[in-house]
Amino acid sequence: MESLKGKTVLVTGSSRGIGAATANFLAGQGMRVAITYGRSKEHAERVFADLPGDGHLMIPFNVADESSIKDGFSKVMAEFGELSGLVNNAGITRDQLLLRMKESEFDEVIDTNLKGVFHCTKLAIKVMMKARTGSIVNITSVIGQVGGPGQSNYAASKAGVEAFSKSIAQEVGSRKIRVNCVAPGFITTDMTDELPEAIKEHYVSLVPLQTMGEPLDVAQSVAFLLSDESKYITGQTISVNGGMYM
Ligand code: NAP
View 1 (cartoon, rainbow, N blue to C red):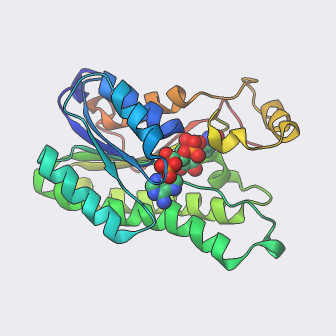
View 2: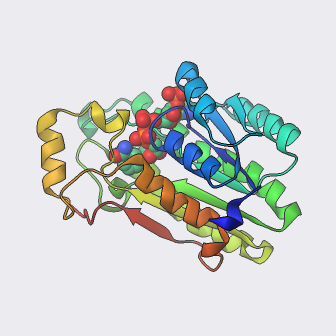
């Protein structure tokens, strides 16, 4: 995607999985990428070393901690001087049936998956408003669209991000800033790797394309939404789920 060349992007949670694949794909399109890690510094170092091109940045960035986010943004702005794109990808699950779910498990998921998006989007919008351009892509989930047993905290966080994105798209459209979501289905990463084999087989049986998706499938849709090829698309969600609607 030619329009991405030379532009800058921050990808949260890019030490592993979908975030790592997205960072790599965007760097391959000629973007300067700020990759970030929470706990997995060594993974992030490998991702960083493999990025095509140059001018990239690697920073610690805990999306559940406002001061870490502010610090991370300052480092990105000091290095890049501007920010064309933000991918809010960092996310966690703390699955549990409601009657057994601790308040801390609910809060942890909301703080990371939803409140983190609030803080990061606010800081990115400040920069993008001045530039009168920008694209933000939030990674949600099929679970936020259809729910899932044992995932009420996660589903609420992801549905929240979709509604948040539609609202911000309406707030900032006049400044030529776009806000969209990519909602993955069942993708091969550490997050799904930890599921029992029987559950994985069950999920795959629900996918019309009959296979799990790969992180690169998600990365390519993110790149499209960051690029000028999607310049008339905002407030939308692209589902990358093999047709899965349980
Ligand atoms: P993953 O392999 O478990 O990776 C999660 C990433 O998020 C890691 O890089 C992790 O960084 C980062 N992260 C977690 N908590 C963080 C925090 N507090 N601050 C900063 N970074 C943090 O997960 P994934 O499957 O790639 O998921 C990526 C996104 O896609 C998530 O938002 C997830 O909800 C969504 N998603 C995934 C699937 C799927 O099937 N895999 C389906 C739908 C949606 P550290 O390890 O460095 O802490």
